[in-house]
Length: 347
Image (cartoon, rainbow, N blue to C red; front, top):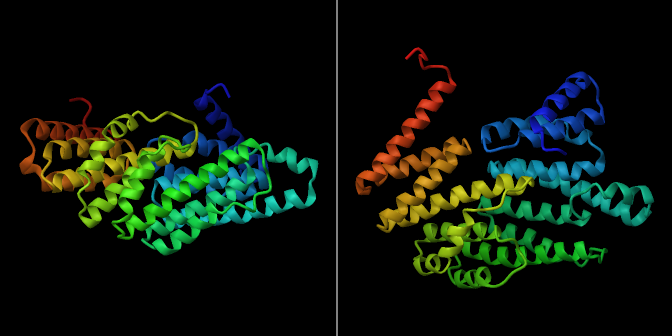
């Protein structure tokens, strides 16, 4: 609670070591907090942290499991491990449905007290699971099934609560559904959906400003996939694109993990678009941003994709860009060699 995470990590690891032969909830809580502390920029480290914690998640209290599955799903989403996202989302949905049913059947005081531990209203975990499953379907280009999940989290007449927080989340889901229905049509090749999507993005909305990176990423993916000229759209949202790079820091795993990965991928899609259209200055600028971001994230697959794209268009880079690229690659190489202990430090 004081933000001294390194000290907390040592203590949690000590408790976890003492409890490691026990099938205890305390051990699971320690592992959950270790997982949250260890999640950071390095995606390789995040894979390890998520894999270790996943073995403990169902030892948590039934209520605590909902946030834990949400956090695991968001980490796997940032890693684009869609099979794991699907697995975590379906488990979260099933458990949330049971808890929501118990809440309204039993009306027990202790159940209501335990629910206060959740970071969101309970119905959100059911609907968010549908949103995650829609994302899984989109990754597989199964847009018809993605639409079915999207319609599911758009229709929330079954939610019994009427408080202000509930209404806030219902509006968010309605906004996300409206945008994602159009995005699915666009990504499936319905070019007529493009300008409906653009008008939605440009209209005042209750959704977070950071959602725009997802929306603009969808536009660039469609533009590159279907060879659409979106220069006028990029010009319209130029200010947004520049300001989005200053996204807020947060302790929420979605903001810490999913958003940075989407920024890096957005940079790659922009670079691909500009380079293929001969706008080399803009293309290399966004490509270097994406490359640096993927290096920070330790995402080797996309880092290599960035290098391949650079080499493909190297002939069109000005000398300053080539020099900056070579300097960066050299720094990456030296850091990697030092990390693996292959440099003679006497030199």
